[in-house]
Image 1: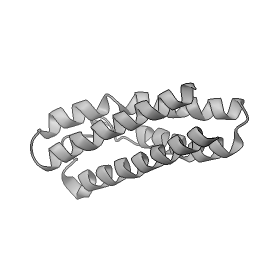
Image 2 (image 1 turned 30 degrees about the horizontal axis):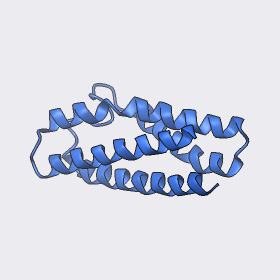
Image 3 (image 1 turned 45 degrees about the vertical axis):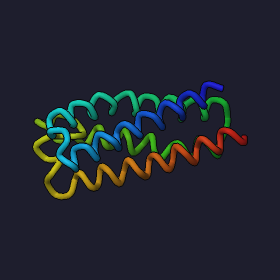
Length: 125
């Protein structure tokens, strides 16, 4: 099924996102390189999540649609609310301020758990 490919690729992307954020936290990578890597994946993640949500709506899988819809809305909200002048969702000048690194790490872990849950729901449905 094509949905498995999306969930698996999302899982891999989130794993690399968590690894990159932890590298930044341990100072193995500088903030500019880290944010540049992470911002490359914001739009593909948003498009993939919105596409899978729309596919669930079209195919009338209501429970899975309702499970995917809040995540798609959150991804769009996160992208739209980037302040003008910032490099993207992940900005190197602000990532160490106000605990943004910890909040990005927490958000990534929550999304990883969500995609793991979705993987098993798609597997057994």
